[in-house]
Length: 615
Image 1 (cartoon, rainbow, N blue to C red):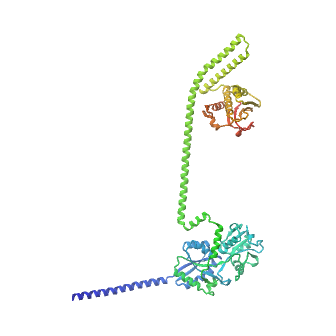
Image 2: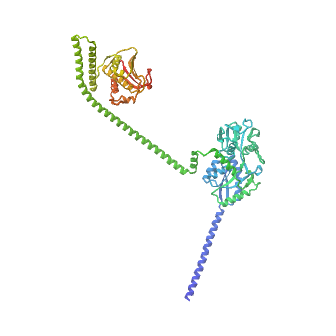
Image 3: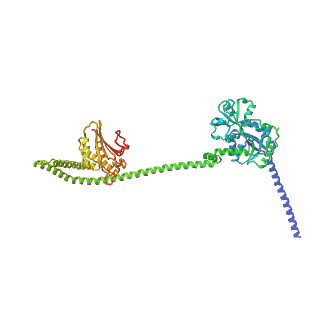
């Protein structure tokens, strides 16, 4: 009995749960039905971008009845016409402000390469017996223009609507390409005036352009509406296909297309396509849009072939255009990359600037250290040379004095004995003179080391130069060197140190002798000394036809700088010191680089120019 009651209670509970579940399901279904009904009753707004080739107002007047027709045929939908140009259509598709577009097949193909578009229908023209091939380019000129053929258009100024316009420009470029012309360089100038199209014809009328590229039937429509006179214009390369009412210069391409963006649901695109196909030819929307209706999409093969020809003619786009296109698609990433590039470039330039600063500083420091080391080395050498020179001068002074005394004693003894031997007396006189000169050189060296002022006396530069040549006559003759002393101008005496100047000339002549001795060819070795007496100075040129300078003149004049294996590097330094003490100047250069106004006897060798002031 208890078991029977338990089963009864369980059956009642199951029955109650079942009815509760049915009520809840009914409520859910009722709510879903209400939601679906609300969604079905909700009206969707759609924006249709239309190429406004005759202006915004004309585009709205032409296409708004078509939008009203679609709003009636597609439930809960409202269509709005949006007149745009080529760039506006692209930018609004990019921002998802357009759901549909109506444009020519060239623009459609161009956009389909960048946006996912569905091609719904192709428009049938109300003219030309309902043909679907009604896009082409007509090239028009003034009736009195000398332009008769396409070839006559070379170098002319042309106007067109847009470089992306299939009928307004691209078809004409394809025609020129087929005719064998390089269309990119064919015209003298091409100006793109945009929309509307009527100003293109006016530019030709007013003489501002030699020709205009306009879409098929543009001229006939303007003539029909009374905007222009037919007698004022001619068509270049004219052709009127069978069954057509207008002249065209190019091949005809498919008519405008109706396309949908990928954001539109497939059910809606099917409904719109069905409404377009069902549009009667006598409906106000068809009449206003100048169409007999819509048909299935026409093959775009001819347009694709045209674009291939134009792309082949242009070649690969420049890198900057590719970058610009990528930046247009990816503005955020492009801006970030551009900012990083600019910052990196600035940072790199800053690092390079700091690196150059440091490098220049290190190079200057290294150069200064080398100069200091060289100066220190020269000072040490000068100190050593000073000690050696002082010792040598002291030690040589006594034997030179003895030679002088012995020579004078021998000359006195000859006179006392009354022996007549002029040759011996002359030799003793030369020995005495050279010993006196040697003593003077020793005294001058001691004065130079002690920085004493040399004694100035009245001098004849010609005699000093000739004495220097006489001292080296034996070596000059041995080397078969022909020496000449040429004097120019009226001579005068000069106040100076005879010993120092004599030493300078000896060093300069000795350098020329060494340079000529190095010549390995069979040239005639010559040494010229030209002395020019000028109003306020004496200019002396020591010219040889040797091998020329083997280093920089400024380096050779430095102390202890020499190009000779056995040289001490003191000769030119002493010469410079002597000239400086006489307030003059000395310059060493190759004959071919000589800047002197004096004409040199040859262009090979070296020339030393010494200028000594008169005062």
